[in-house]
Amino acid sequence: MKGTKSGPMTQEAAEEIATSALSYLAQNPEYLGRFLSLAGIGPSEIREAAQEPGFLAGVLEFYMQDEQLLLAFTETQGHRPTMLAAAHLTLAGGVDYFAGA
Image (cartoon, rainbow, N blue to C red):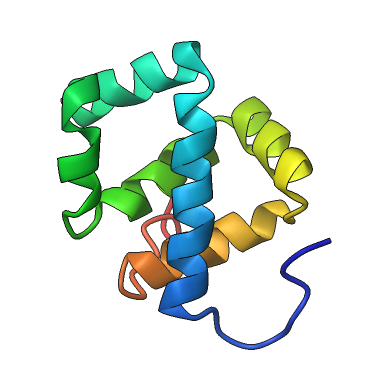
């Protein structure tokens, strides 16, 4: 299973996970449509939006709000679900939005 190293996740590793997650969304029209709706963008704007700070963190946050999607993705990619949370934390600049939830 990927992501079994201990220690903080690198920005590069977090971006790789988030990019894989975005690609997985693109292959699942139902989830992609819901994500685009929540993000307030259209399909033609994904590439541009992906360059914006925070967008990849938002992709991972979307996964963390849907357990079925999260588990399907992590199983397919060989990641533990906690790796997405670690990647989100890294991409969000160390701000844990879920700590007080």
